[in-house]
Image (cartoon, rainbow, N blue to C red; front, side, top):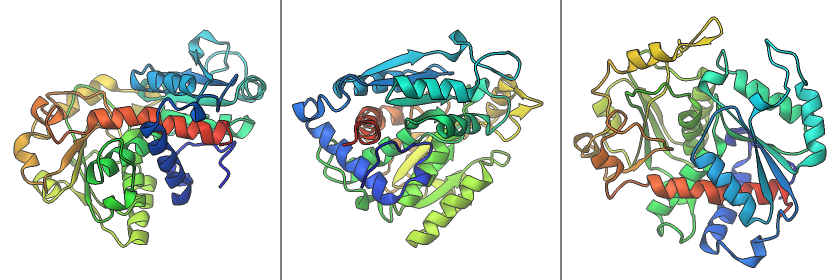
Amino acid sequence: MDLYGKDLLTTQEWSKAELEIVLDLAAKMKRDRFSEKYANILKNKTFLMFFYNPSVRTRQSFECAATELGGHAQFLEPKAMRLKTATTAGETVEDAAKVMSRYAAGLGIRILEDQIGAYGEGDNLLREYAYWCDIPVISMAHDKYHPCQGLADIMGWSEWFGKGPGKGVDPEVLRGKKLLVIWGHGALARSWSSVQEALLIGSRFGMDVTLAYPEGYDLDPMVISQAKQNCVENGRTFVITHDMQEGYQGAHVVYSRHWMSPQAYQNGEFLKKQEIEKALQYPQWICDAEKMKLTDNAIFTHPMPIDRGHEVTDEVASGPRSCIYDVAENRLHVQKAIMALTMGGL
């Protein structure tokens, strides 16, 4: 199966077979990380990285991935470039994309929360770049989706319920497991990208999905519809509840993370302060040891950074059933696999 030149904006737009190819290669790259057979796949090739928003894991993992494949990742800040915006003159996406396609082997874009004025603008920007680029465009997290995180999640969960981290990946071990994606109160106003990607990829791989949140924190109806359909096709269930206790009952994977409300954007403005003040009114929506006792010995997962003391307690986040660092590490491995397949023609 040839993935060379293929864009990755969301896992939902890749076939399950294509996702499995990525996971299989990522597991091999993790097991034999510095093997010579992977060291020159991107030799003399550059991966351009547009960071509208800062990061910790994303920049580090992509730069490490490019280096370990023999290539180079170039950090770019759009604010330091002469790009056209809604309020300033500059180079159009068409021109920028066509020129960058002559320079690099791939382009990554990260655009979240405060860098857009309405939900969907980030996704539209990535799709415009993908339209004009002759090189693959990879989402490094945008307002709708976070595909690399979704793949790292599935890889990590599969390892925990399989043979263990670094010992291969068989996503079939997740079939029939209950994934709880639950809202957590917090002092951050987070986008929907990571949680929506988790719903989509978990449902693709045959998990029973429960989405729990206080009333007023609905996610994208289109994404919910897709996740429900994924469950139908796999003969699994998709449940939405506003009851915390119900959500935790029998869960195998607990994903507790804050996300903003649908009212976060008003008149082209991101209302961060308002969102934080509203979220902090729900202190009971925290993942703690007592709630984890309701699960079926679940693992705790989170894409990080964690808002400790709000989304989850330290006891759970740093506990023996937490897979947060394994998932974080897997960002490197799945991104190496994605880059090797889409930019190296492996």
